Amino acid sequence: MSESPEKRCARWDADWDECAGLLSGAAYSIGYHSRLNHQERVHPTRESAAYARALVESGDSARYARALRCIRTVLALQDPDPYSPTYGIWPWYAEEPLSEMAPPDWNWADFVGTSLCHLHEALPPAFPEADALRAELREALLCAAYSIFRRNVRPDYTNIALMGTVVTGYAGETFAQPLLLAYARSRIRTFRTLLEETGGVAEYNSPTYSWVAVEECERLLALVRDDAVRRDTEHVLRFLWTDLARHFHPATRQLAGPHSRAYQLYTPESLLQQLPLPGNSAPCSCPADLRERFAKLPLKPPATGLEVRCRHIRREPDSASTRSVTWMSEAACFGTVSRGNLWVQQHPVLAYWTCGGGCHPAAFQVRFLRDGNPCASMGVRSVQRENTALTGFFIAKNLGDYHVSLDRPPNGIFQAERLVVRFELTVPGAAVRACGDAAAVFSAGQTALRVAWDPGAAFDGRPVRTAFGRGEACVWVDFVLAEGPARAYDFATGLALRLAAAFEVLPAAAADLPPDSPVLTASSTVWTARWRNLELEIPAQGDNA
Image 1 (cartoon, one colour):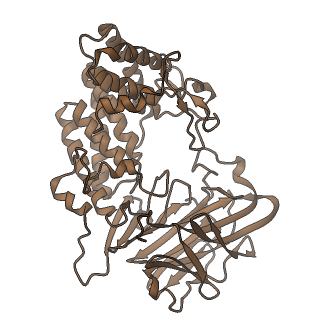
Image 2 (cartoon, helix red, strand yellow):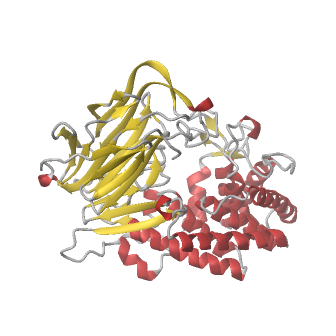
Image 3 (cartoon, one colour):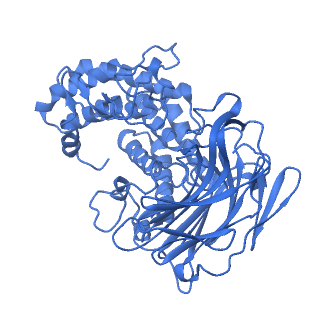
């Protein structure tokens, strides 16, 4: 939000399609919602609405005709029918109507709606057809706001919970809709209460959505004047900045793991540019007393590291709550989550460390692959103390394939030739070597991550085979659960899996010490894994993740 309207206009001007009245660009794909081919030429609604906003906010009257054309083209693509299941939302692209999406994305009421709030607020009296356009924007915003009200997402859907508060709060206050304003007050108060009672954000440490949440709080304070909304928003904003500061690792310039939602392995540069880091000039709402934490860790000799523990999802009993542990030293950070899964957007076991040479830091992650493609249906349980963690894996009965929920196979049956749990280190010059029969050392620079696993690992009654591999700028160890001719695997009824591993981040020079593997004992429904001073229960026949 700190980028000037002129810079935003300049970034998008070359993509303007005069014939279509929208921006044009290559289709992007996250594996769901859109059926269009990746990189197909399309006209996006969200970006076009943001462009129209920038054109208006630039104050350049020569740009107003284009802005008017763009706004009205976007408005025409909204579903205004209150009896329709897609009421109030937009398709991603003009080329793909809501009826053809897989499925439609209800978040577009929030994403496009926030841009329309700014547009309505910024329209100058001299804007062409200003009064008529304000009336059109009013109708579109009310449709979006009541769609958001009807959907009523939970407060643990962090970015959308906040974004929807912007649209309903602005529409309720600006257009004298008491129901919408009361709803916005309730929504931000519920969000604040959840944070205070839980102690952490449900979408924890997300390199994407942590910053979106900050921006939405800033947007609320810019657009909504209601005292109750503003008071709760200021508390939430302080909490979000504190959470970012506690989990940022200065040496690697990464938001430390674990991550609940991430679209890439490394923290995007667009987020780093918004943080109070040396050399950044963007305006920043970070409280002054938190800024030093982004520059250096508060380590006091002879401390071996800093440990941050958070609860993110509260359950009864509390032992079933989702919690994260993040350990940081000057050169490395390592984090795990107590309950998670291996969806491509989730990093439940994640380490970064510096390697020198000006390249990205080393990044260690755990993945689940079905025929070489990311698959979400593998659950994890972890317990961590400082730089060591014990993790167990189990078949997730309730999840999808590439997406965590949108592409669940019929009856939970997956067709596969090869199922693999992969431990992977990414950085130029990465190395991995065996260390005994049931251990390996991943190394890069002066730091290593040693992993030791249960030598009795088995899946569906057969031993699990390990295989070492190397790709471009990455190395891995595969735990091959199954391989051979394609066959059906019934994840819904549960498949027996015995797989646990112990992780330890340590100086490379100490990595060759004799490894010690976790020990597993069985009961009727769980494996109990023990390693050093850590103990963990793992579902033996699959479970909900």
